Amino acid sequence: MAFLRFLTCFCLLTAAHAAPIVAVDVGHGVKDSGATSARGRSEYSFNLEFAGVLAHTLREKALAVREVNFDGQIGSLVARPLAAKGADFFVSVHHDSISEAWLKSWDWDGAEQTYTDVKRGFGIFVSADNPDLETSVRCARSVGALLRRAGFEASGWHARKHVPVDAENGVWYYDNLVVLRRTTLPAFLFEAGVIKHREEELALADPAYQAQMADRIASGLAACLSIKSPLR
Image (cartoon, rainbow, N blue to C red; front, side):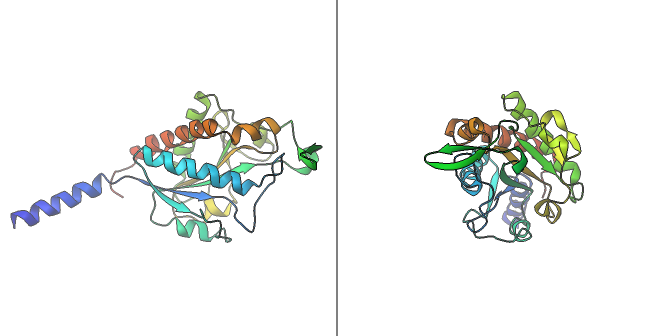
């Protein structure tokens, strides 16, 4: 009986200190590759690469990771939050573009591509329809603040279409995003930067840049999720 009481107490203690689980979703996929960069690379390839770095960094911060769409086969936006069910937080990884009206043409490696000079920087989106908006906003602001302190630029371009949550730290409302509305988890969608901006595209493909950005996101999430009750 004494052993059973000890085992019960141990299991409760372990559960109370279980690492929060972050579901990391790779935006777009094999069939829908998203935007195309200034040098002709697909957004999906950027998303997959950075999501891998982020997942590794989250684990280094003692957070558990649920990988969503890392094989690029989830075509349904509704299926993504379903695959994240049981996690504590949902992050959808994307890279940004710009409308055609702001694009210019250039020749890259013998092929005509398009680029922009007017938009760059990261953006973090939350939905007011999310079932845990308070945690979503707290984590988004935590991440945005750490990114800015590390020297990353928050894009102000989103003020054209979106209501600010915390514009200084790059956090905006985007209520109609399916992956944010249809999840039961606190969540945000992260736009790492603008791949149509030629200089920013190169930075976003740089391993050192990716590692530093992932470290700030993971640190922000670790701090934010530690505020929640440790019992899931």
